[in-house]
Length: 357
Image (cartoon, rainbow, N blue to C red; front, top):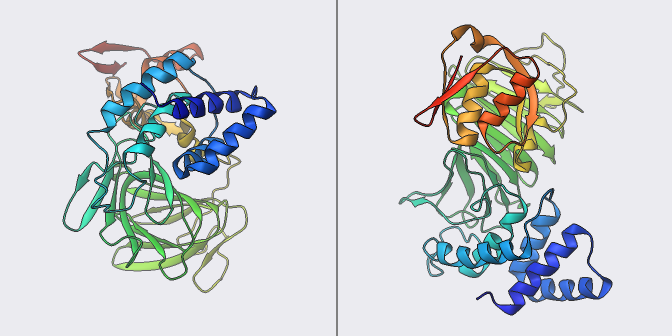
């Protein structure tokens, strides 16, 4: 049975985000939020996340009750608190209860750890899974599918260092004494307090950094040399083993000595400007984006997104490029939409593997 206060909070949240809450109910909701830090955290998270579809109160209660049993097995031991991520079980229950608003999966808001080692704490996702996390210093973010964030022991006390494989969106709490450092296979991003996205899947053989707010210093490492760049809001930079590429900029991209690097032939930076603000970040809104991607790149994204094995049988299709934003629940629906627009592709499913021809 759901705690009556928790149930009241969930009902009022539902009304608030649907826009039909009365002034008296709004006062009650504010009071409940002030009384509990977990409720306040959850409210602000939801307020800053687009809500598009809702479940009925009955469905909310069912998932809420079921989530309590599920999360009891994964709640962080309060005595260890390796990262200080959330306050243990109580918050996880509340998070799971409201995850239904987003249809991103019941596990999106879970902030427990999947694995631990002597040197690192791990936050991981599998194919088809996206997860919200919160660190002990108040920094938070989202981890995209098939990704791993390794957080070094002592985070928030002696340092703020981590390593990323995959993709993550970070909202970093300011701390002048402890810079926030994220390493990938070929870059290092250093910030004091900002909002940015970082993508570095092994099969892409590159790292893409997108700065939303604040300022970050990006260090590209390759061929035995390294170079530092300072990004401004709106900059998108792609780093590979052989080049550093400015995909988009709003203000400027500077090297560490504050010299603008905007000319097409200046060093390794090659500006390619596009009017596609925000496409790199739509995944945190549960939207799958293709932006001039070849079919071979699309299938990699769909495999991670939908947890599906996809094989392109007609090799000539691999170089065809596609652009679009999708919110479909199954990859077959995405392919059906492409077919409906005249794209000459077909597919069949055998033993849970999708073959494109």
